[in-house]
Length: 180
Picture 1: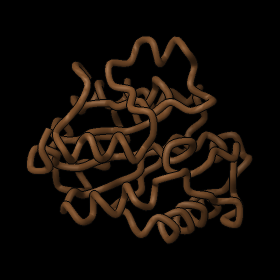
Picture 2 (picture 1 turned 90 degrees about the horizontal axis):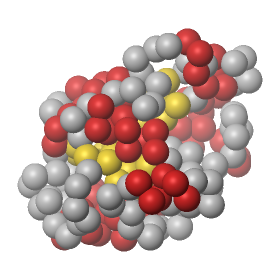
Picture 3 (picture 1 turned 60 degrees about the vertical axis):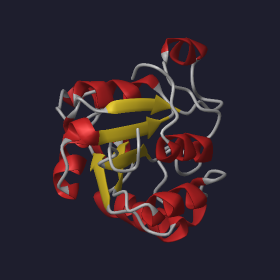
Picture 4 (picture 1 turned 90 degrees about the vertical axis):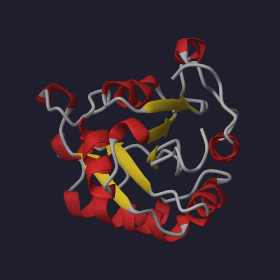
């Protein structure tokens, strides 16, 4: 995939762009993962629109407020050098909404906000639900495993670069694994 063919790159938030702190409502706890700021900078320099798609079930469970999620997102955005859109699902898993990953709603909404077709997007995440949401929306999914990624998820994924920066560089260079 060349930069021209890459309409937009969408990232999962927790465990992919920033360290995963369960139900984090404190902007002071936001820490980018290794290489995240550089990866976002490479995409910006290549003119590739970026977005974040994130399940935030803590809102639906009463553990976080929308305002807290927005403050954490704003802090992450500041530390990462700025992304083009942030979309999150505030619903609890049992709500049955269409936006919660692995459903396609977050991908479709982020693509709409960026003015691109979901089929031109790549979603980078750290769990199978991220890749499944990409597929459900007609986008391509890339799994960047971390300590929380299940071995079965890695075994089933077609594209598993070792880290976020490598994933972005491969996408920009047009080198990739087979499948989606």
